[in-house]
Image 1 (cartoon, rainbow, N blue to C red):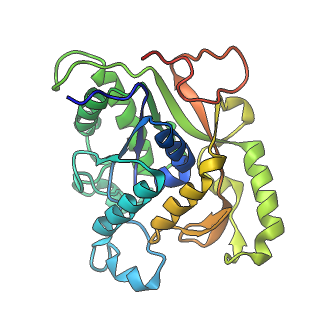
Image 2 (cartoon, one colour; image 1 turned 60 degrees about the horizontal axis):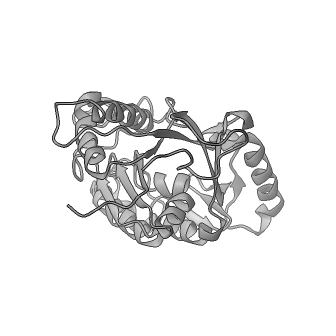
Length: 294
């Protein structure tokens, strides 16, 4: 077996594009620093809306080929971020995008939301025992904004971390992840970003601005424990987001999803340490690996 780098980071996301929006600068920074960055994406995002009219035929209610196309977008995004280890949970298409809250896709056979948590966690346990990450990044219990697949990704990630640390049940030696983080945005940062956006909106290709309530994971500043400065890698983040062209329109330092409502593109990415300890006595961490042992 090839020897693993000293620092190893695992990110668990629901759909292609979530990783670039939430963690693109973080992933690019750590990959450039020689950290082994592993991304596990839980679905192909088959139920997503399609922005470019020329690709509208891929949508679930037409040819239903969006998932395979989004896999190619994700591969392109990973090249922009310098991340070489990406997997789909259980293999491509093992769990299908569950759609938005309250839709019939939530309970459709094979949807990620309808899967038993332990069944969905099993292949992630295998990844954890193979890669042996010290740090895991995923969503909070609400999934950042309540999407069923984001909530399920949180549940599966935490359950897999628990199971990976115990003996039996799956191949490989047990491994305990030392630190688990949730994606966050401090309210003051969001407010400042939207103030700049409103001042510059007239020059942007987006008709209106979104609201802070539309940004996943916004919390009071005191909840945020960690700030990762990805300023030197924000161009890679923007290019990775642009690679997800069916889902995102990018006009740095702003972007919009299929609703065409502009949001800030953040070069500094923020986290809440949900499990584990840090070596920092006070103030925010500036490294996800603070306090980690090899």
